Image (cartoon, rainbow, N blue to C red; front, side, top):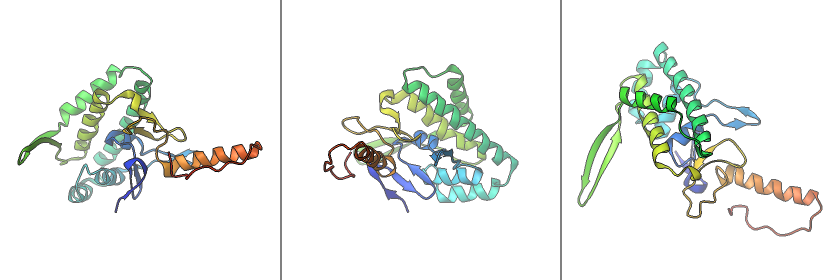
Length: 219
């Protein structure tokens, strides 16, 4: 069962969902803990679990894909290629947020993936409210590239790069959707409080006058 955390983020078993964008959450599947990178997508089964946690596939679709493809060489190859794409996207996001352009090789790769594994569209009308919903049909391992490629392209095309940031304290990325646009940490629970406590301890060590700080839950 998911649990809400700071900044509207969700923490689900085994994964962090605090990026405010599916692709940023995908990039955050290789966090650094105690100074070492931790791979949260080591195999196809873990990849399917992340897709389910991200609400990109249903539990039934995850079970079906896992039962049919879980131990296949093809599935292992897709998991490996997905991790490689994640790292290329991460590097591109870092360069892009600093003002650089998306490299044409990555743009070409995303276009090829979207052509080979397209998203589908569904029109929904509910009274006076209408919408178009994108979805995909995961019938084979490679189909998992569809939402990642599509949303990766949409990230570069539609988000304000000044609001896509890396946490001040760790490697996690997020899209700042706060009104003031001053978010600095992946979440207050994970890094915000830790940073404030460290700053307070540093002031004490330097012998600065003791002052009463507000609740650590503040931003």
